[in-house]
Image (spheres, one colour):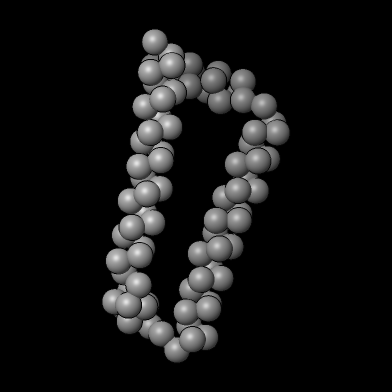
Length: 80
Protein backbone atom coordinates (compact mmCIF):
# COMPACT_ATOMS: atom_id res chain seq x y z
CA UNK A 1 0.00 0.00 0.00
CA UNK A 2 1.50 3.31 -1.05
CA UNK A 3 1.52 6.51 0.93
CA UNK A 4 -0.91 8.25 -1.43
CA UNK A 5 -3.34 5.34 -1.29
CA UNK A 6 -3.46 5.59 2.52
CA UNK A 7 -4.06 9.36 2.31
CA UNK A 8 -6.86 8.80 -0.19
CA UNK A 9 -8.53 6.25 2.07
CA UNK A 10 -8.27 8.57 5.07
CA UNK A 11 -9.79 11.43 3.07
CA UNK A 12 -12.68 9.17 2.05
CA UNK A 13 -13.72 8.64 5.67
CA UNK A 14 -16.78 10.72 6.55
CA UNK A 15 -16.44 13.66 8.91
CA UNK A 16 -19.03 12.15 11.26
CA UNK A 17 -16.78 9.10 11.71
CA UNK A 18 -13.87 11.31 12.77
CA UNK A 19 -16.13 13.21 15.18
CA UNK A 20 -17.36 9.91 16.66
CA UNK A 21 -13.80 8.61 17.08
CA UNK A 22 -12.71 11.87 18.68
CA UNK A 23 -15.58 11.82 21.17
CA UNK A 24 -14.96 8.17 22.05
CA UNK A 25 -11.26 8.88 22.55
CA UNK A 26 -12.14 11.79 24.81
CA UNK A 27 -14.42 9.57 26.92
CA UNK A 28 -11.75 6.86 27.24
CA UNK A 29 -9.12 9.38 28.33
CA UNK A 30 -11.62 10.95 30.75
CA UNK A 31 -12.43 7.53 32.22
CA UNK A 32 -8.74 6.75 32.75
CA UNK A 33 -8.14 10.11 34.43
CA UNK A 34 -11.18 9.70 36.67
CA UNK A 35 -10.06 6.20 37.70
CA UNK A 36 -6.63 7.56 38.62
CA UNK A 37 -8.17 10.45 40.58
CA UNK A 38 -10.54 8.10 42.44
CA UNK A 39 -7.63 5.80 43.20
CA UNK A 40 -5.61 8.70 44.59
CA UNK A 41 -8.53 9.99 46.69
CA UNK A 42 -9.00 6.50 48.14
CA UNK A 43 -5.44 6.58 49.43
CA UNK A 44 -3.92 4.05 47.03
CA UNK A 45 -0.70 4.45 45.14
CA UNK A 46 -0.60 3.05 41.62
CA UNK A 47 1.52 0.08 42.73
CA UNK A 48 -0.77 -0.73 45.68
CA UNK A 49 -3.87 -0.43 43.48
CA UNK A 50 -2.40 -2.70 40.82
CA UNK A 51 -1.40 -5.14 43.54
CA UNK A 52 -4.99 -5.32 44.73
CA UNK A 53 -6.84 -5.15 41.39
CA UNK A 54 -4.15 -6.34 38.95
CA UNK A 55 -5.96 -9.59 38.23
CA UNK A 56 -9.10 -7.73 37.22
CA UNK A 57 -7.10 -5.35 35.04
CA UNK A 58 -5.48 -8.27 33.21
CA UNK A 59 -8.86 -9.98 32.81
CA UNK A 60 -10.54 -6.87 31.36
CA UNK A 61 -7.62 -6.10 29.05
CA UNK A 62 -7.61 -9.71 27.81
CA UNK A 63 -11.34 -9.54 27.08
CA UNK A 64 -10.95 -6.25 25.19
CA UNK A 65 -8.03 -7.65 23.19
CA UNK A 66 -10.04 -10.77 22.36
CA UNK A 67 -12.99 -8.66 21.17
CA UNK A 68 -10.76 -6.46 19.01
CA UNK A 69 -9.06 -9.49 17.44
CA UNK A 70 -12.42 -11.19 16.82
CA UNK A 71 -13.76 -8.05 15.17
CA UNK A 72 -10.64 -7.68 13.00
CA UNK A 73 -10.79 -11.35 12.01
CA UNK A 74 -14.47 -10.96 11.10
CA UNK A 75 -13.73 -7.90 8.96
CA UNK A 76 -10.81 -9.56 7.16
CA UNK A 77 -12.79 -12.74 6.60
CA UNK A 78 -15.78 -10.81 5.29
CA UNK A 79 -13.54 -9.01 2.78
CA UNK A 80 -12.54 -12.22 1.00
